[in-house]
Image 1 (cartoon, helix red, strand yellow):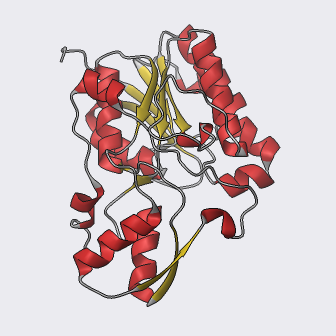
Image 2 (image 1 turned 180 degrees about the horizontal axis):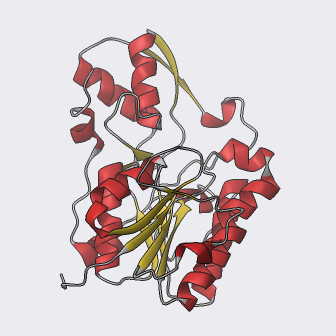
Length: 287
């Protein structure tokens, strides 16, 4: 590891991952922004309305990390023009303005750029999204990669925390198990969930190494919600009846891809990072 110490502008520092990253790199933060929340340490900034250049005055930042995004796939479908502006058009503008100021942009994509027909997709796998959210993120990936833009693009799987009130898929699943004896759970969609603390550490690690390009960020396991639910009840030593369902049998606006598991050999080769498995994080919950 070199001695380079990156300095960050964090857009969306009040979001779940943004706040975790802000806390992890607090001594390396030039500026963090928020939109609706009112945290004293964060500057009010609306990514859709305010000029990004206003954040750059006398800035010594080396990187700008854009956490502001619409990641709810249903909202992306229902408000396509709005979400496309937030997930693609505005981020494209910030990337260009950052580079003009010699600042490396860090943006995020999703495993939903895949159509779900293959397991353990790599950075070189063909992207063919079937969800509107995935289509927007594919445009962002293509903008950076096809133009060889020196930005860092991190393709995320489902991110989870070890907080029972975290509002992520794992916390929701645990709360459902604790509250119900009979639970409908998806058995059909496979993915590679990643612990939030691993995400923030990898972001910093790659920035410190001055890396650019595309990296898959995902956990070490190919799982579905049914497999995870069984792990939870085993750890809690409780009995629950699971009604196994296909994810596309639920009431959804768009069909979901069935296998968006990802291969992370590229990022592991560069960083030597060991990703957390989900069993170890389930044990960290305070029930």
